[in-house]
Image (cartoon, rainbow, N blue to C red; front, side, top):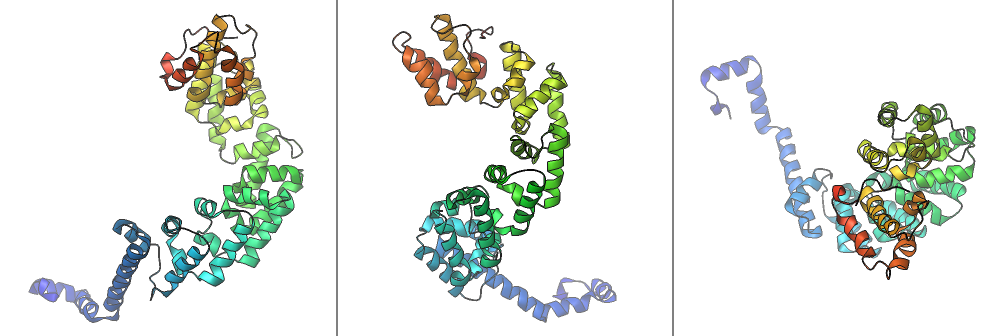
Length: 390
């Protein structure tokens, strides 16, 4: 290897002790170890390609996350256990791709008992794959020290395995955070929340029970100070849900958007206390809604403050298609001028069809086309006239 360097270069290397290092590397156990590691990694890649039909790129990516195994015995046992438990080839491949290190775990002692517990809660194999329930973080959690106690705690709040399964489907990580789960429940109780409302929050946002208790305490304090909710308020749940992902800066930014459309703080707080989840809506969507309802339809801040859901509905899939239908019915005098527009927008699609489309098919044969075409139409070409309002 030293032949790569000239005489002068070798003298310089020797002065720095590098010459000996190069000789050492050429014949050292380190080189042998690195060579062995490279060989083992190659064997893992080939195993993933042959046993799970990974592409070479998929196998190389997965192998980087997987500790090299001395033989195929352990990964084979994991694959066999998954097949015995009814997972098909596509599901097994997805499990291994999302969490390759599972192939290094003990199939019968570590994995199988936990899969059995989750399935006893009513979770199906496709659901377990979808929520990545077999990821290493959960599978490494102790069954008796973490997972079963977490399930027991959640069941004590929600009352049934069906509801426990709902929580797990939304965040399987809650099973690996017994400490925060129990501490956060106690914190919420100490702030006036009863178990019924804690349960609602748990189903709505299991993430709250996976985060540190200090973080949750800060969030609860913000809900109390910024929104004025107490723990015994029914809206406290939604306040926590909203502010858990909204920083003070984002909260103030939202205030700025509403003020730029002429809202005063009183109207903003009426809206915030009526539906704090509005603060989780993107700035762009809020601006589109404010522009449409205030500048195109002429509604004032107070109406929107009292009906904040209007700013949360999809403009393309709900608001504009329904506005177009109501416009036609209004022009033909088939509905009253005083019709409650909020009621029309808040209905489920089937209910809207039943009330505003089906009864008028004979009188207005093209009414359904108005609805469906406006759902596909560019936003600028939907309304027949900008003065529409009830």
